[in-house]
Length: 417
Image 1 (tube, one colour):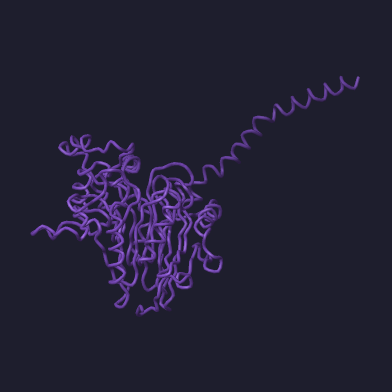
Image 2 (cartoon, helix red, strand yellow; image 1 turned 180 degrees about the vertical axis):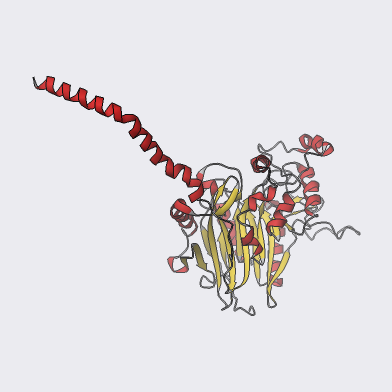
C-alpha cells in the first residue's frame, strides 16, 4: 500500500514538473547567458586617456613579443581595418611616453610582390619548423603606435635568410624607428671596415637617448635563441646572437662608459616556461656585472617573474619575460600581458610599474570589467614572485617596484654620479 502511494505521488510530481520544465529551463538559460554575452561589454576597456601622472619627468615604456603577421594580419583583413588596429587600446600609453621599445618578432616581406614571393621558398630556412613574416605596413603601424625602437634580434626575424634581412632593413628605413640587434654586419673590431661602407648597419649598434641633460640611456638588442643562418658577423648580415657574445659584452661595456643607464633587450629562455632557466640566470648575471641596468626579456610567450640581480660591480632589474603583447596564440597564459613603464619622478625617485593587460582578438588592452580582479591577481602574482615584499606595492591598478630602493639606478633627478 505504501509503495502504491509513493508511486502515485511520484507520477503526480513528475507530471507537474514536466509542465514547468520548459519555462524553468528557458529562465535558467537566460540567467546563464547574461554573464556570457555581457562579458564582452563588461570586460571591454575603452581607449584610455591621461595615462601619465603629473609627477613623471620621463617615462620609458617597454613591451614583449609583437607579431604582426599570420592570424594577426588575417584578423585585420577580416575586420576591414588597417593593421595598426592592433594598437587601438594602447597607443596613448606610448604616445604619452618619452621613449617606447619592444620586441618585433617578424621580418617584413612584401609577399604580394611576385618577384619577392617567388624567392621566399628558396630563402626559407629549413632548419626550423615555423616561419613568420609581416607584410609592408607593419613598420608604419609600429611607428604610428609611438615606438622609438624595436628589437629585431630574435628567433623569427631571419626565418627567410638573407631575404628577411634585406627586405626588413629596406622597409624599416621608411620609418623613424631605431632598429636594435639586426644589421648587415656585426663589427667585432677585429676587421677593418671597407672604405665607403661606413653607413653599413651594425647588428650590435648602440642606440642612445637622453632622460635629461645629465642622464643618458643606452639600449642594445640580443638573442640567445637562434639557428644556423641567423648570426651576424664581420662579413655577413643577421642578428646579434650568442655567437657574438663577446661583441655584446664589449658593447655593454662601451655603453656603460658613455651612458648612465644601459638597457638590453634579451630574447631568451624556454617557450611557455613561467620562470627563468639557468642560461637566463647566467646571462643576466654576466650582463649585469659588466654594466646592464635594465634587461627586457622576451621569447617565452608567457609572463615570467621580475628579478633583482646583484653582482660585485652592479645591480640590475631583470624582466625575465614580458610575455606576448601582440600575438595570435589562443591559450590563457599567452593572452596575459603587461606594459612595463620605467618612471623617473620629479622628486628623484624611480619606479618600474606594470599595467595588467589582456589580448583579445589580437589586441592588447588594459584589464577591465568582471574579470579584472582575477586577471590582475594572476599577472601581478607572477611578476612579483621573486621581488622582496618591501620593494613592491599595488597602487592605481598597477604593480609598482621601487627601483632606487632596490639599488638599481643612481639617479637624483638632475644628475647621475
